[in-house]
Length: 119
Image 1 (cartoon, rainbow, N blue to C red):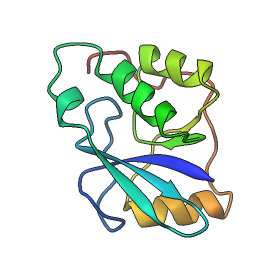
Image 2 (cartoon, rainbow, N blue to C red):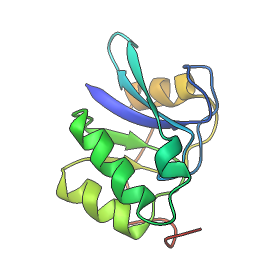
Image 3 (spheres, rainbow, N blue to C red):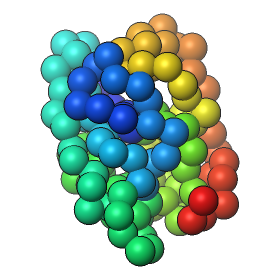
Image 4 (cartoon, one colour):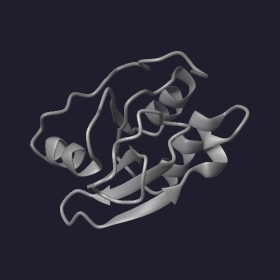
């Protein structure tokens, strides 16, 4: 399965970035092989508005089925939900730990945004 995880760095041992739309990077990871692709999210991170919507479109285009992140705003959540992408929020630690916890079924999915937009 392909999942997306917001990250402060370009590797599995990087810290999870708590921001979704304005994360430094988004890693698209195959949960079985741990092979991954890095999306440099600088354009969205510095956007005046619409960062979450654009980031949601990016991970949808990469066919991710799940997003693991810290915080997800209402506009981004609507796009993710419409695309059928499940969201697990309030994550901390490393990207590698997030994948392990996902694979072990230790994460729960949210049914709504967990932060107001533009925080």
